Each structure stands twice: as structure tokens, then as C-alpha cells.
Length: 147
Image (cartoon, rainbow, N blue to C red; front, side):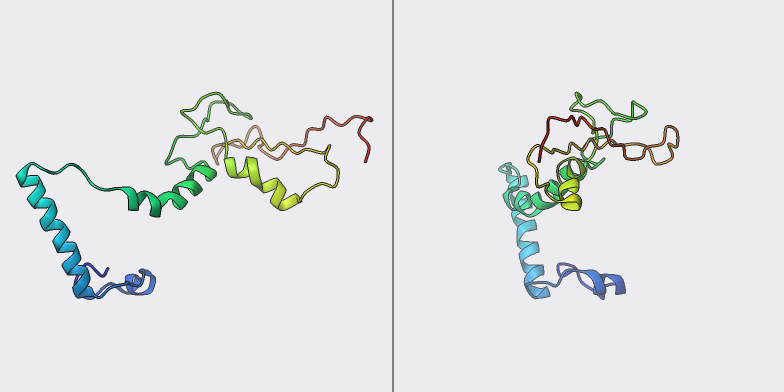
């Protein structure tokens, strides 16, 4: 809230980021950018905003949103009862985080390199109760695998 003025609400006081510059310096910096923006717009020389620092700051958040399969980035594929389509880039099949990381984190590495786990996460509406969406273990084990 350092670029604003007045007494902040109690929740802002408790949760807001701590400023790196004084309130007066924040007001000066913010107002200088506003003046520069208005000057460029009125002169017809405004070419756009420099988004490089925004991309740098937000990239970890966007990476996390991609890994979770955030519905804010693309809607889920709610078109099948159990297994959503995987060939449509316009909707999310499941969480890439679950598919690529959770089993290794929770189960660890196997001592045998022939053992592989493939996790196929699917998005489903929370109110969907039939069919039941519980984990399923499918095995393709045969007797030729030795430890």
C-alpha cells in the first residue's frame, strides 16, 4: 500500500508486503511514471509498456499455474466419465504436477529400473459421484522381469 495514502485497513497492515522505499519516494516514483505516460499519450509517442520485469516476477506463479492445470489458463476436459481426452490442446486432461511428480515424491524411486509408474491424472467435477473416481492400479507385470 506504499504508493497510496491514508491509514491502511488492519488486514492490509497484517498481510501486505513490506515496502522497500518510503511512502514519499513511492508517491514520487509512481507520479513520475503517470506524468511520463500522459505525456507520451498526448504527444502520440506511446508505444506500449515494458513487460519484461512483469514476466520475470510472475513467471514462477505462471509456472505453478501450468503445473496445477489451472482452470484460469484453460478449461478442463469434462467430456468423459473416467478418462478425459488427451489430444485437445484447448482443454486440460489433468494436472501435469500429479502426472509428473506426485508418485515419485510420495512413493520414491524403485530399486529395479524395469519398474515404471505412469500416472494418468484426470479432471472431474467435484459433484460427480458416478462413476466413482478413485485411484486405479493397472499392471502389465509378467514373469520375465527379475530383480
